[in-house]
Length: 221
Image (cartoon, rainbow, N blue to C red; front, side, top):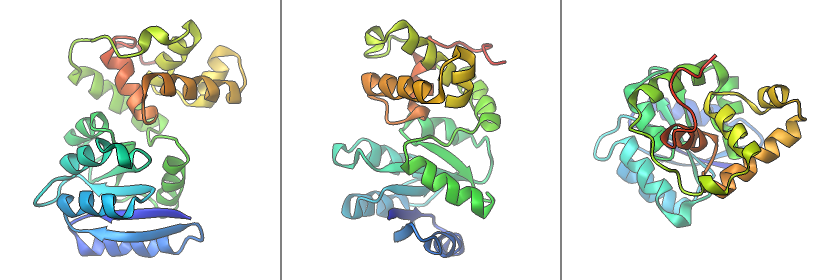
């Protein structure tokens, strides 16, 4: 059973998400928080698999709450997905840096929301191809000067190549086609790279690819 914590200051939004998710046989909403302070506290108390976190909330906003959760070693298994009104909300970039596994717009189709919850808990990041490329372009434009990422020297040449492809938004299937390997092999390379770099998921791998200078703006295509 996938355990989900909802964090949004709008009661109707929480009620809508709860009704949709609780209707699934493999998903259970274990709690609701009306602000970031409550969200962080409830995450520690309930240790859910996933927190659906609104970016803009009173008391403590979603970004600060996400940093508290992802920065707590005891909550290493908890994934956070940000909820936003706009696909390219200016705070999305900081959310990814803060450790969020991705983001969803609030008017996402119900089936997409359910698939997203399952995908993130399964270890994927919510960086779908179309949105990813726009997200990365903006992220790259806002990135600081490249700095050496911890553990980058430990990667093999193939793992660096795979990391760069993840960084430009390719899925495992697309990476497999590009490198002429099986999707399973591509997934294995991605997983090993994340382990070596201590990345929580693909979203953080994208961040590291840019911050290390392994991928540069203009490489999309």
